[in-house]
Length: 258
Image (cartoon, rainbow, N blue to C red; front, side):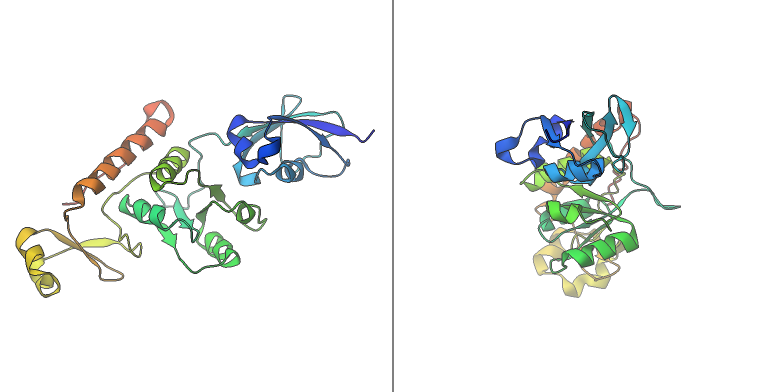
């Protein structure tokens, strides 16, 4: 008989397995040379989504080579998941693939440094993510399997609300709402109404007095009719982040610029 190992996949990871074979415990044929990481990915689980692994209860790395008959447990990524930060960096930076445009705008609303392009292919995404040390967010499992990618994460959910909650629960990043341009990710700076009056519609000039402008693209912002909905998104996000942090420690920085 061909040698086998026994792999048990955490329930949170079963979504990555083929629907017809979505059971947590699997017997996997083993050739004696493949790494544990290769075996896990062959089942359908991208390595960036696989958490701590153990063999017979002992922690091991994905590069480990199991022995025939070994019992392997693959856990889910613990949440919140830490991201290596550079000196002086307060929160992770992100890069989203072409299918997550609405999520990108909501993340920018919350002050998260979020790069997004609607015309960038997979190799270019990996290059930018690595060069700028950005967490690549995607729903493309193949993209997460690219060995060159330094840090990636699968975004769960089909609705932007669910996607945002998943992102916040996973990374619990510090928030600085109303500080970034939702169109280009540039920083917002206060602007005097008198300096932009010619750019405003008559009704806008009459109804609002507080404005901001993107320092990069020049887009002008004010609290318009949709402001209450955006405020709700910000409040909900701050609550999710606070709840996601261990023992409720730390608060999301949810300063609202007026």
